[in-house]
Image (cartoon, helix red, strand yellow):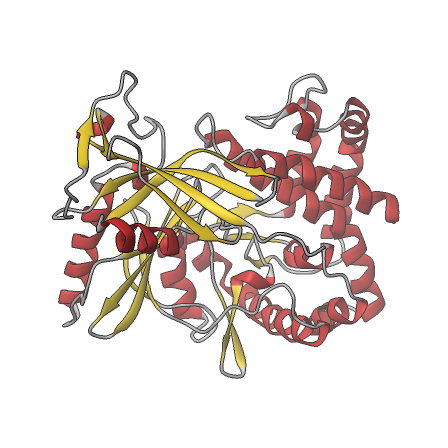
Length: 427
């Protein structure tokens, strides 16, 4: 018997007046149904379906509750999005504003795009930035992605398609627009060039670029990507002062050794970190193993420094979904984790797409700093440190997330610690 097709049912909690009023249609919250299992952070198609069915022109502020998958005769994914109407949106005759007993306003501590006024403010900012360059908007901004970490909007302009991105601030995130402006100057054609940057509001506008490479490509493409990225890193080693001045975080080996000496020991086997569900957190035995590994991690960071590889630009989240094709070259984007550190900390894509040929294509670009066999030794030493570095990144994200956020993000700290333990056992 064939597997039933999935559907996604979206309930819309559309608010005004700070959430005191909620829109109903014929006495009920609006709902739309679409085929497939839609992702909770991609509102473009559902918003278009809502507009087509009701005429309502809305923007999503936040996911109101975690998505729920229901098995049954017709498997159903259910989402509830908190939204607000765009100015001038028409109301159908059956629409009414009601005042529920419990206001449904956006979270007090949420990112800026959960504010009903944010979308209009960004539209004005982009229009002014385009006008300063002799361009103009050709229509409303379209939401491409909205979730706890960032919001991405697309705009049709007189100069072509433009994307606007805003990201949250975390203890380890860089201000992406400022960093990108420097990277584009230093490495033209290898990173996107910002059209406009508002560092205070953490906004960056970019021209559209080629399609992402994606994490399902063959090993040969992965090898070419990492080889080109290694060339970028090698070239960055002489420009560290510029990178740090632009806002790249200092995540060099001394910093990592300091974290390794103290951070693991603060883990409590009885209490998960920052909002991680108990079932996703480490077992007491795993926490004990992380505690025991702390001195080895600190020592490994010190030993790795002895291999003589220079610090370089570190992307921090270098998977193939953050790489785009640009003719015969590749474009590296999404630089919120930009840092200066040991280059091998960026090889996280090899954790789930491991290939010695891919690894070797990357390492071959570093032979000016030592024989190939010694570079392989350095990578093996760096592998658990790279996983530990990722755990620190996700822990810093989880630290600032409001209560009730996507549970998958806090769980990533535990997942990377497990990968660290597994990688250490393989050595």
